Structure formats: structure tokens, C-alpha cells
Image (tube, rainbow over all chains, first blue to last red; front, side):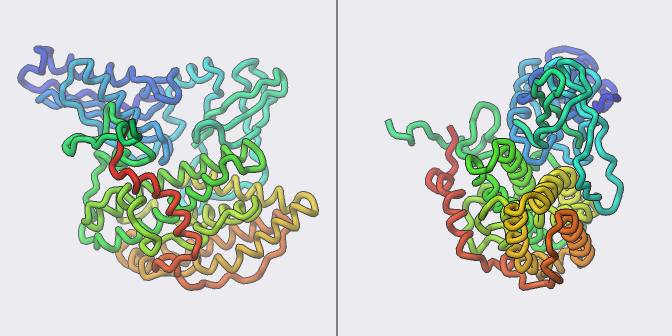
Length: 189
Length: 294
């Protein structure tokens, strides 16, 4: 998984705020932004989730961080923006701008390997590969799709979907037939 | 202490971000915040706004109907599913209404458009505003609207308006889940017990005459195609019909017959008696406490 963060721009001439070298400011801003936990899946950072699209520091010290929503109706976007701004302010950046990026849309393929490991550790089955969207009509699949989603607790492959939707739009509800435990699965989009 | 004591108006020059909390669903930050919202060169802003408003209103009104299933669905899982589908649609509505308010130059934000228009100013199809009926009626309606919208959004990913194209690209994967959910229920009920089959057939029969409006091509849609940001209604309708018949066939339900375009009533603001009470409920708190945060 490649990180979605853009390369840090070359250090401009002149000192950054706080006397730090500009490249140091860029690294500091990126580290601060990357460490913000997701409001609904706090085990993961925004970087783990793949919703952080870039962090840039302008020569005047203004930080611009770009975020993309997971789902159109994601109710956590306002929280994410506020948390991100607060974390960057705390890291010493007075001027912070948060941009929303819609294109290209978020996909579960953008969840990093670290993010997938943390999901599994929290008892949430990570997503498989997202369906490939080709141009033209989306085919309608009427027979239940058999996805191989191993139980995050006992590892058994013998699991079934109980509902396509769960406590958040991004998760489905499943049940393990071996250990009988219900669990959530981040569904592929 | 009155309720009003807990309410305050945000200072005019600050964005409702940070520690301010939106109240009752109003005062959310602009969902297109920081997105490049310049109009495509040469595009007619009013025509783009009308198109976005129609598609936004379909989603907003259906989201409200789906939310009414909370505490009423046959199973908790279905309640959660319907609420999640409604949430996706609400998100699409927010983006589209925001785009509409920018494109027409009126500066109206999503809250202004959602909460401070009356029924005749809404441009959703009548199918979205009809009462839920039983689970079969609701599911048949959800199948129709999600199949139609998915066929449309799939094509809008190539819209000349980059914002509409991005909203559509995001919506496609959501709508694919909505359509699949509804289609699988129609099959399960149609191919289920005698009672579930009878009621699903009844719902499909009641739905069929309502689909004419969905197939109608309003002036707003024709204009959108001419301007390059709309999708070709003929192609959308063809895909839509094929999906509907595929589902009926798999469900063992009787095909009620040919589908013919009807009048674009809702797109012109001519609504049923059911929309005003729905809006009354949706808009009541926002109108009682305009601009409130807590």
C-alpha cells in the first residue's frame, strides 16, 4: 500500500514560524495530521484509513490538509476536520486550512496494511479487494455473494453475513459459525 | 431556564467548526468545503442548479421516508440497513443541494434549501414522497429509485460538471449496495411464502403506474443533456427497465406490463398531499430555532 500523502514540497527560502527549518515544519505537520484518530474507528488514524489526501506547508507557515469522506453521508467529517485542525494547532501551526477532496472517491483499498492489522486486532474483519468498477452499467448480483471473511476472533473461515449494514455505513454484520461470535466487517467499496 | 438559554447564534464571521456543535441537523459545515466549485466554462448555472436540486430533493425526501422505518421495521437489522441507506442518500442530498445553491448564484446553503423551502419548491419525483406503506411497498419503491439513480449516476460520472461527476462517482458504490439490498428482499419475498408473494406482487402492481414519472423527461433534464452535464434519459431508462424486469423474473413475480413515460409532476413542483406533512416534520425544529447551535 502506497501512502496517499503528497511529497513534501522543497523547503522554500526564508525561515518558517517558530524558527524551525521549513522542511522540519512540513515533517512536523505531516506527523501531527497522520496521528489523528478516526472518530468512529479510534483504533485507526486518518492516515491508516486512507482519508488523508495530503498535508502541505506554504512558505508563510499555513498548513493545508486534504481529507476525503468515506461515504457521502459520513457524519464524522465535521469531527475529522475539527480534530485535524486542533491537532495541527497544537503542533504549533496557527493557520490551518482543511480541504475536502471528492475525486477520486475513497475506496477500502486505501486502508493501509497497518490499518488492516489494527482493524483485525479490534475484532473487525478488514475488507477484501474492492469490486472493480468498469465503465457501463453495474451488474446486479441477485444470488447472495459468498465472501470469504475469516472470523477476526478465532480465525475460522466458516462465517456468514447477517446484515449488509451495521452500526456504521461502512460495516456489515457477520457471525462466526465456529465460535458463535458476531463480528463486524468493513465492507468493500 | 428556558430551552432558548442553551441556544446561541454563532458569531457571523466564524465558521461553525471547532467546538461549536450543530443543533438539530442545521449548521453543518459545507460538505463541498475547499472543493474547487468553479462552474464549467460556458455552463448555464441556473440549469445546473435546477438539475442538482431535482436529484438532491429525490435523495433528501427518500432519506426522510427511510428514517421513518426506525423502530418500525420487521427486524433490527432491517432498521439499521434502511437508516444507513437513508444516511447515504442524505449525504448525496447535502452535496447536491450545496452545489445547487452555488450554481444558481443565490448563495443559499444546504440548510436554507432543505429547511426553508415549501412543498411547491421541491423538485423530487412523487414516488419518493409517498408514505412507506408496508415493508413490501417500501422495498419496491427503494428498488425502483435506487435502480434508476444508479443507472443515472453511472452515467453522470462523465458529467461536464466536475463536482456533479465526483458526487456521482462516490454515489455509485453506495447505490449499488442499496439496489442490491432492495432487489434481494424483493426476490426473497416474491419467492417466499404465499402470503409474502401475494403482498410483494401487490406492491409491484401499485408501484408500476408510479414509474411513468421516473421515465418522463422534464425540461430540466433535457436542458442538462443539452448543456453536457446531464445523462441521456433514454439510456438511463433502458438500463432501469432491464434491472426491474430482471428482479421480477428472479422473484417469480408477474410483470405488470409495459412501462410508459408519464408527466414530470414532481419535477415541476406539483406534489401529492403527502409531501407537506413530511416537510413539516423535517423542517419544524430548524424553523422554530433558525441558525441555532448548542
